[in-house]
Image 1 (cartoon, rainbow, N blue to C red):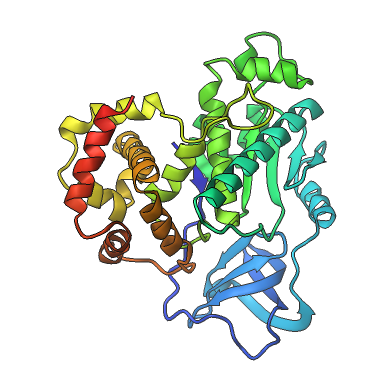
Image 2: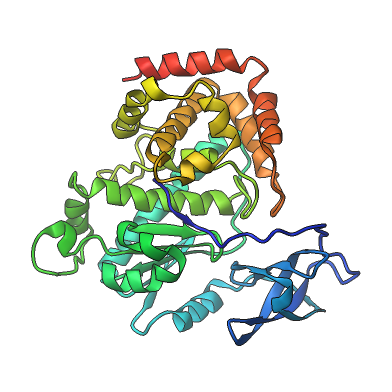
Length: 385
């Protein structure tokens, strides 16, 4: 299942968008006192609440959710807000990371790594192939993607231990079981080199050629791990190309469903994915196995309530159903699915819908006869091979 690292959202009551008479697009400055440290941030105020809490985005794309008691000072000037250039961002990222990191720059990504350059090149190729497949897929579906405002960033650690030390503050105890994750807060994906001893089964040795790496990562035992990287990278693209807004009320089944739809790469093809949306035999099997105990209102619960996907006791079944519903709707109701996608893509950050509003959005896209839709969905998934 996917693992998006989230900072606990603030409850911004009586939210007002910042419009204090300053020049549109001017850069803002925020001074915070967090954990005993004074932080000076340059960027843009996205939301300011009546109580003084705020949502602030810095020039590297990181989003800060600040409580009122943390805010020391806010100001702005007439200098236009601009994201860091790739070179500027690369320098700042290297300053944040432990010693020994380098940067591999591709068309759309900055890949910061301290493993072999060969593995960094392999990651860059994989991510660019995914990016191309993703943008082509949605363009053909009639959804207008936007260019990412910020360079897409990936951190690649040499081994699981160093990755774990870095990721522990965001992932907590789950870090030992997560091979990659996308962070809503930082807008980055973080992973570690999968070509070492854990998959190769031999002495720790970093692979340097694409042929060697592909040979290792094409093994069946590696497939779920590579799929996880693709899954998290899909989240990153979706949140940067306009499918979703970070910290908005995008239903979890929907964002995870898209990531699962794309998560199986074709490592044998240097040109990219030969097919998108392959049947996941694992997810399909889990979905069918759960049908006998599936609640009668399962579809409505999935659409309106994220709790089953977040609860470890129910997550496996809920993720399987999220994949199945996404697969069915894209294959059998593509126009309605894109209509629903367009609605969700316009959701503003920090505004949370209740179950009634979520269900209305779904009905508006797919029609009032959702009993018929659910019956068609179940019949289709039972026949799928």
